[in-house]
Image (cartoon, rainbow, N blue to C red; front, side, top):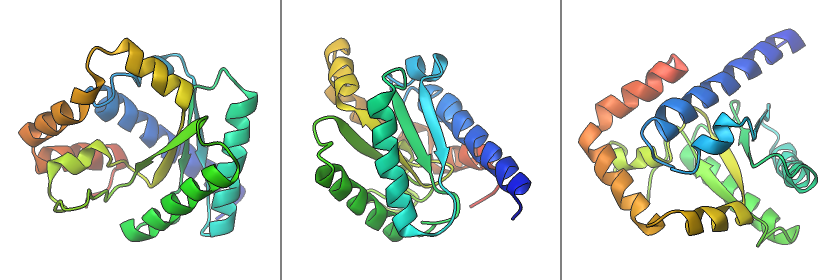
Amino acid sequence: MSDAETSQRDKAVIEQTRRWIQEVVIGLNLCPFAARPFGNDRIHYQVVSGKNFERHLQALAEAFQLLDHNPDIETALLIFPDNYNRFNDYLDLLDLGNALLQDLEYAGNYQLASFHPRYLFEGSTPSDPANFTNRSPWPMLHLLRESSIDAAIKSHHNVKAIPEINISKLQELGFRTLQAKLDNITGRSE
């Protein structure tokens, strides 16, 4: 793939990710804290190309440093369009990403949230609509500032109810509607 093709592909991946945030995360109010950083353009989007696992962990370490040095960036999304199509492979990346967070002594400063096109909560089935709380157009790691999480918890009247509200909302919409919404964003079908 030429540099121009890669650049075009990366722009498309970021645009799909932005649409997903706008139409699903914010549009369905799955995260009541997402609208402000999205609307204020305080999210860093980074496409991490290729299949080099070490390079992916290096990109994660660099993203922690980016957040350290740029307080105007609220949160970061590392997007992996070339790898981790299998959910179990992605879970390996997530496990090593969390280990890296500890090794680099960023625990207490940052957290990782996980999103994947085939996200599957333990004990659920692939067609369970509840999985769409963490289903995204691409495999991605979401870097969150602990201070932002703490502020969000303090500002929301009942943060513990959010997961149950989301599950109920997604169950009502149903698998087919949610999958169609995701397919519409990506231009592909499951």
